[in-house]
Amino acid sequence: MSIEKTLILIKPDAIFRKLTGLVLYRLDNAGFEMIAAKTVSVTEELARKHYEALKDKPFFEELVKFIMGKFHNIPRNRILALIYKGENAIQGVREIVGATNPEDAMPHTIRGSLGKISTKGLFENVVHASGNREDAEREIKLWFNPEEIIE
Ligand code: TYD
Picture 1 (cartoon, rainbow, N blue to C red):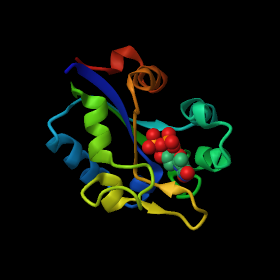
Picture 2: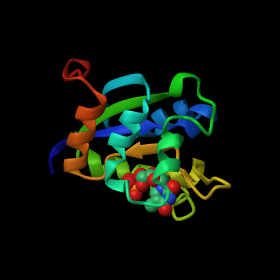
Picture 3: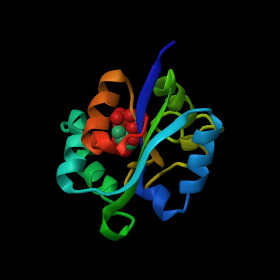
Picture 4: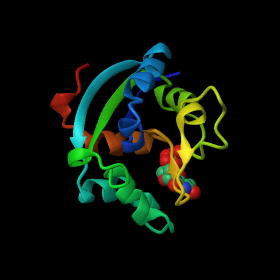
């Protein structure tokens, strides 16, 4: 057991479909502590850096457009970025979030109950949550300045 921090992004599909409150409700109920939160205007540079490990995937360009809100007409590419902290927070949050493909995600998870597959085949899966410690550290640095994290 260890105290971890993990990055959550409330993605453009969730912003568009007014799911922010539901997602926060579920994360809060799981007992993790929100230690940072802000709206972010997602630039192309930030999107590409965030998903750089997937740059060779066939869906990469669509993914960049998706996280920038291009498929949901989100004004100023605005999404919500959060850091949650707690015991085994990285794995714990991933369990609440569910599998990457909303059709594979368990029904009680965020992605299982709220996610969908777009007509283009991209997974509109509501939230991003860091996958492991290395990713969490990198992603927290990418999305937040240290003074924005209140511990
Ligand atoms: P990935 O990092 O593999 O999954 P996760 O978000 O669960 O850590 O993929 C990043 C995002 O790319 C994923 O949330 C949705 C999208 N994606 C697709 O649209 N199709 C796919 O086949 C995969 C693997 C991912």
